[in-house]
Image (cartoon, rainbow, N blue to C red; front, side):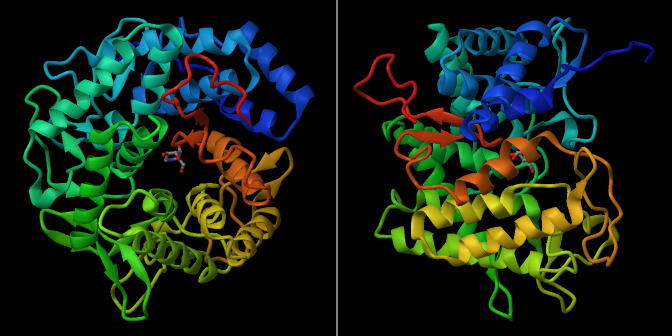
Length: 425
Ligand code: DMJ
């Protein structure tokens, strides 16, 4: 079409606000805040991804508000949240993936199974929307995400698994593809974190999480002949023995969820987290650059290695370091800091360029081909998780904070406090 639509500008600045704050980069934080005050503008003709805008912009603004107490961040977060509400105008209330924030017209990705919405997209709004209701006094945000749960709980799940695709008009699943990596990942993460963020009162989120992990263990988690535990992808009952870099976040998730695991499974969930961390470390260690590929396989005689050219890139993703940080906090096993430091050295050696850091086209090559892109999650997640890995546990302690899927810390809403959960640093 000839309709030109723009984008919301400033993702890197908004995504980096809390990282600057946590790292005590006060001058830079002040500059970024001034940019937000003067330039962050949602009144644009832009077709945006509801998920990406939520995790990066809403999440980034919420964290900046809770850490700094500066009203501008609260105001902008709520203003943006209101802009996202038309995405829920579907027959089921399952939101569209894409939304024109000027016209309020939504649609789904043209490639998604039969017009479906994506599990990891509509399932990764919960934490932010609960906080938007909390901060605005408007219950509509929380109602929208509670309704998503209701739709999911009315559906039959194949083998207890959640397919990646759900049609927002019919309320039925699309293709029966299941993934703990891309298209599925943060849905599972948000079930667990919703329970933790509610001060462990959200029993529905808790049950959905532990039931899902049970089905994932039975149907997706396998051990290679070389002894590496991995999480495969499930396509209508058939396994694809591939694990994405994105899937590596699950090590940290299993660790974080270990404490609440039913049936004496705490130790088992910690062990699972540790095994996923080891597998993902192997995926880094088996490259020439010591940075992991986008996806690695366990078939055709290989283990934890990318075999397809288009899966050999590394775009500064955080998931492996994220898992090291969680496992370090939970076990204090020094290997997680060693592995994190290996990643620091590899990033400095291969990704550092004039003006920032760049992704790499092929981590198995001996010389770098840079893609010349610094993803905003490098500042919000990769660097923040590295910083936390080498900090004391009382910096953003897990009892008081949960990290959204873009690593933006949100305070636990304690049962007994009204509005004084701020600044519990
Ligand atoms: C980030 O935007 C988030 O971590 C999301 O959950 C997955 N993809 C990127 C980082 O790889």
